[in-house]
Length: 365
Ligand code: CA
Image 1 (cartoon, rainbow, N blue to C red):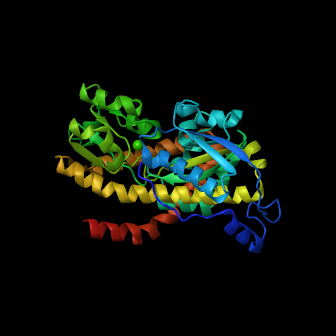
Image 2 (cartoon, helix red, strand yellow):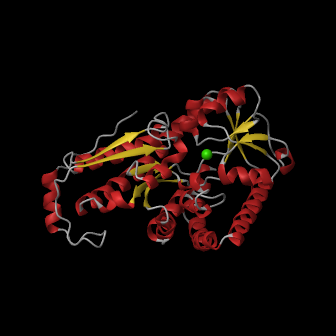
Image 3 (cartoon, protein in one colour):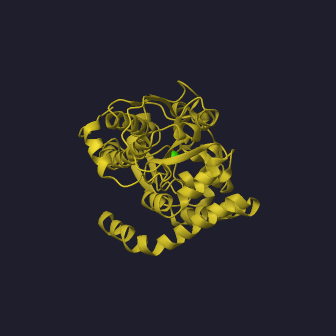
């Protein structure tokens, strides 16, 4: 993978910082003092190395933590399947077999459906809005309340930005075109698609291409140009629809077990949080830098971009709203998080509509 260079930041510089720092922002330990305690953690990711923008986020975290502690806090990073299966990362943190996991909360809605709001929901928040809500608007505290039932907490771990709607072998213009369409689309997006008549398939990343090639599926979604190009869907399906309304700003997380966290010296907690924040920023920067040229390459290969029609967007939006409200009606815990999320979404509409979105609409039109 492409490496980024960072300015070194040794223990000497840290000592200077710690000396003039006020008490730790983690709160309960008093002033942070430099530690030379040796800590060894294992991090399991839900992602393979090949999804290098996301998996690379775990490597940035580990490298920065090591650099900032002079190698004393060492996090070994394992891709999906090496230590634990891709979708059992939270279970491994819960059991204490690993200290930290890189994953998405929405893979674990079986533990608590409201965890979906930590990642994204259909017609939810953009990356900017999601970060604002989770980090500054109280969303992250609500998610950590849910995670405390499983003995862990989450730190933001990056975002893909709004995803693409995916690759279609045939045109879909009206809602009626979705009837009987077979599509690979996981999670809540799949639930909403099936409300619209789509036959939904859950297929792991590595098996999508052959399924598309032999016609077992008519369409598939994945992430966006940079990641999609590597899986080669453009060789089979030339129509590339947008936007991926089911994943408008999916947020990754680093999940840390409470026991492991409690054993960290106060400075290491500060360093971990700083490194996680940097890793999250780098992931978004990489997507924002890599997607435009990847899209240009795909268009050069004959890919045709298609916006979802107003009819499909409106129908999907209405179905998504019904889906969220139905979940909220069934579960008071879900309702509490949904209401906070819905307020953030509603409050953001006018501002973002008048700023980022209005500007983007004009310059990209
Ligand atoms: Ca996706």
